[in-house]
Structures are given as structure tokens and as C-alpha cells.
Image (cartoon, rainbow over all chains, first blue to last red; front, side, top):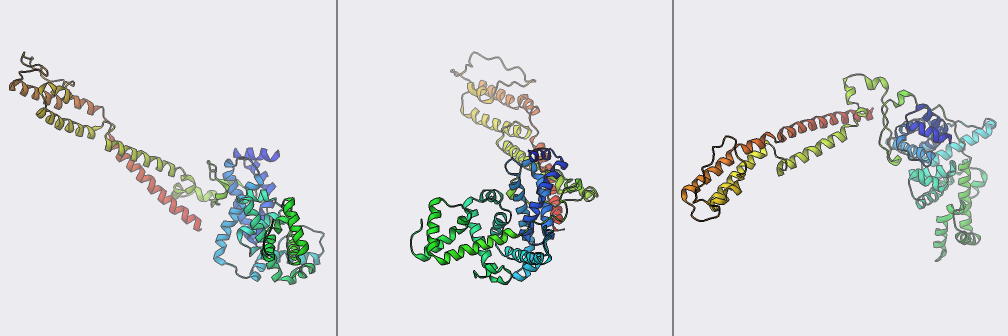
Length: 194
Length: 261
């Protein structure tokens, strides 16, 4: 209800109301951009681009899921950034893992050892995600990290449900193969499956 | 659900394992997959490794934003796009800082301010094409067109004069239009009757003269005074179109330069 009010006011050009929407969605957009792009600097730029583009285009928003709409803009923004980054293409998994960088963890009660492990695992997972094809990466991120349903992913990506299922299946399988290639960083139970 | 050799069945099962994990299969499909998993250790292992992968991804923490992404007035100074745009085709537009956009004479070529150029140029082009077509087809009476029309009428009348009886001259030459200074027509003689007999040479010559006078007379002049100056309009419209296209080119080059920076 509150969101609808902010949307209506934003359509009328109310920047303050739009900024309330930014506050509601900036974390989601930033996290998706971070997982898509693999480094915090590009993710920041992509997030800023997303909200500027959204403010300009909100007059054309015709209802439905605002979350899906804003994420669709975010994915396009990420694609633009990735196109630019392709000039400095990263070819090896090691490079990507290094590129992933340190992400700020939220759990302040975590022990330093657990934090280090999770941080390293996080970087490794991010590196593997970065080696997936763009379309598969996006679907895996939305489904398995952000917890979106197939229908929501279909709205965000503008693809059919069949395409979403197929990309998710292939993305997960490929990611599993990549993880198994560098199993030493994985939990013991996962390594036994190799 | 699945038939064929074991390898083929395994491949098909692999294709739906993701949906199976997410409970997206129908009861029937689910039963088939579970039956196969009970018999096939390789597929069970495949499922387990996929579950582990998804479990690892689920452990990735949500990251705090490093800063607020709320927008300032300066970020959105340029006007918003009035027309709805498909989000799927959106591209981020470089934002001009307030000072940069407002300083210097080049700011009049700011691409953000010249979005109206394209529709206006399209309209001007359409108008020019329409005018040229009207001019070519001579639908609207205008100065140049009437000259041609009078020439056409004259030549047609000459042809008619040489081939038709005198009684029809008025009909073909538009004789109803009388010039203001035209001397009074000679009184008809008894010999001259429309379509009748006994047309003398003298009378024929008089009728020709009268018809030609009518053709050269003020009727056409009157029409020309009320005609459209199509040529002038076409030239003016062409000049405006040229200026619009030139401005668009300058704006386009400037936009490319901005995108590079």
C-alpha cells in the first residue's frame, strides 16, 4: 500500500517519494548486481544507474510487481557493465576468485574463523558464478540466492517459464561441475560426492 | 513418462532434476523420477550434488549496501522520458552534472534537451513530401501550376477549335469566364446557330477570336491571385528540415563524445 503511494508520487516527479522506493530496494538491487558483476565497485555503479534509469522511466510503469520491474532494469544495467568489462576479459577461475573481493558480512556474531571460512567460500562461489553464462548466472542468482519463484524470474528476465527452467537446470549443473573442480574449498560432505 | 535405453532415461532425468528439487513436477512425473532414483545410483548422486550446490548458494549472505543510493536533484536534472519505455530495452543514460549541462554555448546541443528534434524532423519531412506530391499532381491551384494549366487549356482549345464546330467552342474553352475588359461580343446574326446549319467562314473566325480572348483573359488571372505559393512553402520547409538535420547531427556527435567520456 505504502509502496503504491510512493510509486504514484514518483510518477508525478516527487523525488523524495522515489527515494523511499530506493531505500526499499537498494539492498536487493545491489546484491543482485554484486553477484552478477563480481566486484563491489561495478555493482555500485550498476545500482546507481538502475535507480537513475528507473526514475526517468517510472512514468511508463504500468503496475504489476515493482520489484520485478526494478530488477529488470538492474539486469540490463549489469549487462551493459559486463559488455564494457569484456574488454578486460577474465579467463581463469583463479582470476575471478581474486576479483570477487571482500564482501561485507552482516552476521556480527560470527566467529573470526567462521567468518574467514565463509568469506573465502563466498569469494569462491562468486568466482564460480562469474564463469557461468550471463543468462544462466542471472537465473541461478535470482532463484538460489534471492529466493525468487520461477514466475518472478520469468517476469524479471522477460523469458518464458520453460526457458527459466532450462537455464536454471543447466546453470546449477555447470556450477556444480565448477565447484567440484576446486573441491578443496568446499565442505567435506560435498567433496565426498566428487 | 520416460522410455528408451537407460542412458537416455538418465539424461532425461538429469534434465528435470532441478524442477524435481523445486517441487515443480506433477505427481505423475515426480513418481517416475523417484522410481528411477531408487534404481539408479548415478542419478541419485547427481541429485545430491545439485542439492549441495543450491545449499551452498543459499549460505551466501546478503551484503549490506556500502552507501545510500538515494538520488539527488543533480542526478536527475534532465527531464524524465515522457513516453513509456520497455524495461527490457532500457539502457542507462549518462547523467550530466548540473554545471556541465548549463555552461557554454554548446549546452544548446545537449542531447537531453534535443529529444524533440527527431519527431519534428520526421513531421517536416512528411509535410515536405506531401507538398511535393501535391505540387507534382497539381491538386492545389497555385501560381506555377496555373501557368501550366492555362497553357494546357490554350493548346487543348486550339486542338478543339480546329476539329469541332464553332458552336462547341465556348463549351471547350471555358467561355463562361468573361474577362472584365473584354469588348462586347458581336451581335449574333441569324446565320449563326449553335449546332445548326449555314455557319459562314466569317462567323467561325469571329468565334475563334472570341474564344482565344476568353482564354487569355482575366479569368485565369483571378484564379492565380487566389493560388498557393507552393514553391515558397517548399523552399522554406526544405530549409527548416536542413537546419533540423544539421542540429541533430551535431547533437548526435556530442552524445557520442559524452558516452566515450
